[in-house]
Length: 170
Image 1 (cartoon, rainbow, N blue to C red):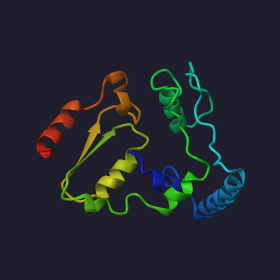
Image 2: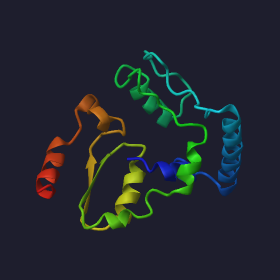
Image 3: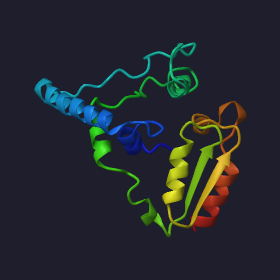
Image 4: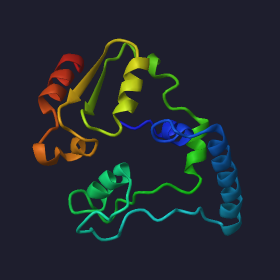
């Protein structure tokens, strides 16, 4: 799980300072004017248009993991463009998507996270904020992208999902 609004607002790992956030907002506001003048939004280039054979050196661990999935044979698809517009972050910064997570209750929530997922803290934060009934299920040895397709260890917990749905979807 990703809290996209939190990622844009606070940075990955909650590392963004107020000054950095303000600078990003100024840059995005200026880009909105440019987009208006051009008649179309700027869409930064996403991943490659053909699958790569290897992960480029120099990528940070998160981008390296996403590259492994989206830009290589494992998860590549020609129609799956991996990008936002250059100003998408502004909307996410202004609308915190987790503000009302507790109001999902009394409907049950199942958070499934990989033990080694770089995104693990998003689900843990959401779990802490959510009201009961809720459950946090940690898949051993799984990374974020392994829960997309099972990875090398076939780690999608289908039994857990089936049990949850059978119990709560009556």
